[in-house]
Picture 1 (spheres, each protein chain N blue to C red):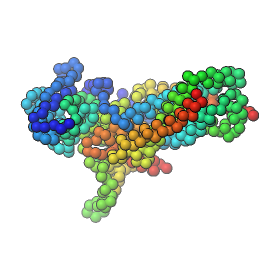
Picture 2: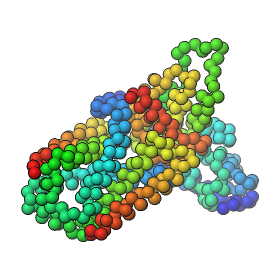
Picture 3: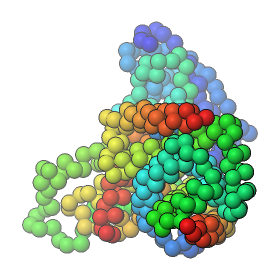
Picture 4: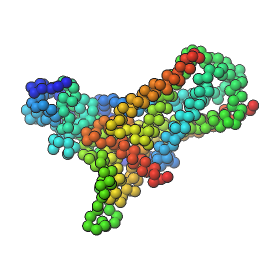
Length: 240
Length: 125
Length: 123
């Protein structure tokens, strides 16, 4: 369905202010297409700036780098700044906060638990020996192994799409694990043992049931399922 | 801060190929272990030739034969999808380019395996 | 609550990390592919009349006893471990210990039941 300048699209937005509302409700807003290839975030801004300033959502860079605006649009998690309105082929967009995360207000979720799980895997370069020479050099081939791992923007879309993550409150989730893989497979890193120890438990890599929701959710086109598989194989390789 | 966590309305996600495959895998798995318990119990209580033959006569009934084909449906689904899970784990069957297509390939293989097994079962119905 | 969770996880069974269980779930699954196909082929596809005579004659041989026992061991392990995965997914209180213990007992009882069913057959 091609949208043209001047067309109207309805945004059905999840509203919930715990200080005022007893229960969440959906409110319809009409958004005018003002530009070819308009993004969902632009539509949300239009609502907030022109129709209803009480609408709450996170956004910052509006170009898919900060990872603030993860939300559930028509049933699929994505960052709204990277999704074209017309790609949904629908006159109505149902916009909800990320499933499985506690809601603070409207589309804003509590990421505390998410980031605590991220810190569990020690997402930083661990040095045991001083760098050889002036800095740690990496060959082009070794650097290329990190493609598809380092791009994660921590938007929470993958963890929030995972049925294992909804069911098990202690599950680290695909996001923490793709970041663990990003350092485990970095040749400069020397802390992979403690990092693999952190993910090698029933709430870590072995909780993944290859449901593949995370792959379809990731707006940066990464593959958390594959990253978890790489970690599993690495742990198995080191045990046997 | 736990507002709405776990509320069914909140956890609602668009079904997609891998999710459906996993959901059925879990359901069929639970059905199979239930069947295994039942099956073993029935066999264990049939130690005497007369009761054994009488029960085997009873399960010759077409209704039981149809249920048997249902069992084959459940078992072959769990088997073929389990193979897919192993391929995802160890053979990289979930690349970004092919993860949905692979689930469809699995559905086709499952259909072939099921039909191939169901034909002889129908013949002896 | 958080402390309890750690407590439960630490004492959740012999496979502490879940690594061995995860791997053997795949191994037993692959083995069951072969065993189940064999079992189904014999019992359901060939159309042979199943009566006490033929079954007990088959079970009298050590080879078939071994086949059926291996099948039961793998199937029980695979099934009960699958139930454990479901429990770990959805049960997070002390009930997890109860349910896991319950299915441990059920598994062992069924293994004994299988052994006393299959082993006594003589030709």
